[in-house]
Image (cartoon, rainbow over all chains, first blue to last red; front, side, top):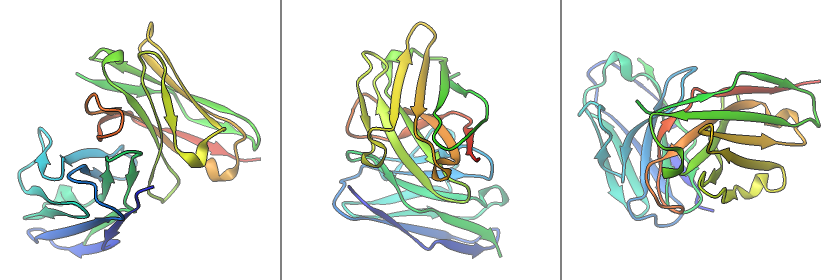
Length: 106
Length: 122
């Protein structure tokens, strides 16, 4: 099974900050990587797919990059509604998720 | 619009089984694979398995093999997930999630149900 390791596990940031979250796969997954946002009590929401494609309706301040084993989610200017937990997910075979990164208010 | 509506919360005793439903609307059920994902309280997301609603082919996470069963009813556009021999470690919110495309082996989840809380307690 492919293991996904996210870092950091949490980050404290202010509105307007640039936030970067990384995700590493235990083996190469090409660009079969997605990012989700989850708010408390809600289902995850797809933000980025195919490592760098923005899901319809998602603000352009979200961007993704990477291929192979190393991937990054960047929020260019953090907004109040972006405080949430973010998960990466590999889609190369049996699916699996990273452990999550909680973005908290500084 | 595409929507997945799940059945309500359940409380079960250890050793029992639970069956959660997920009713799809806004698209043709048989055109997309469906996954189940669960999330224990305060924990991350765990992929459970995938079903092809057209024909019923399934594939399950190794950890759950022998305890989980996924089925579909195309007449009602509903998929089901049944988990047996429940323990306290199965207490979680269970989500159905639609696959993005037409590949069994590759992809992600573009639409999620609202989640169903299953509590296992004596």
